[in-house]
Image (spheres, rainbow, N blue to C red):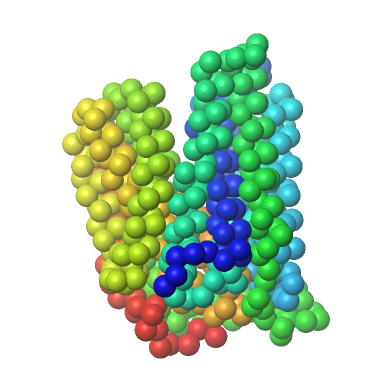
Length: 418
């Protein structure tokens, strides 16, 4: 297989570089920034700002999770995928820019809700465009390359933002430095989306959805639900994905929270998470090649087992250097499991209905962010020890591993999905 990318493959991959900048800001800088505004200027308690932020994130997830299958059906019509992608991207980018010019706490929450909806909505169609830009035999590599450039690319504007925040040059204070960082990351998002807008186009579509579109769309959603329930490859994979990606997302979101609970230094953990991003860049490309020799499914199973080991290692975590080891190991498998899951699913689904199926794929990914945090919180609450909380996440990976064992290889699928 040739490693040289076509213009369409490269343009598609760069969008991961574009939107990952937003995710880095959303993870590290935006929550404390908005919480500070709520507490210092609106007189709210820390508990209130934490709860409000959680509701905003859950609200954006819920909206897209409910709409994803219907949006996918509508976008499967000829020439509509780019329209839906562009609409959600513009919503996200405009709202992200707006954050830098708004000081009202409640308006900021509303703007973040719309940004989250735009980001998640655009990602449905971005993921689905994978089948339009490359062939089945190149999907693992191209999906992995997208994640790779996303990991390394997102670090560039984020590091600039961190430097501005820590040094406050040009007469900036801490709050205005965060606003400057938002603008830098918003510009980055827009610039790296331009190639996607210019060169990536829909090749596969379902021309049976002409006239009476909404009625036909709802009917098609029901039809696809039945197909997924009957299709062993797709149904079992989505179920396995639901469990193991929940564990992955829980570790991403709560790693620093757990580190603080066991007494680790916050600054050291943030730097370690940047190392995770940098390690993920070469790792995801290496394992894209490995998957060609040992099959995508085997590499996914190996990644899941590695995450079980991470949970067990996390239970015994006591020193900062151990967190760094865990960050490096997670960096090796995090991008790999995300990229190969996307490409594996892309090989399983019928191309003419790929948007709709990726709508369901995103539903399972969105709802999978619920169980892990709740499981970790419950285990911590019952035992009074956060170590048992992180150990409990291993259950999700074990379930995902067992179910994935029974998923037929995508390269040799025989049951019909159409």
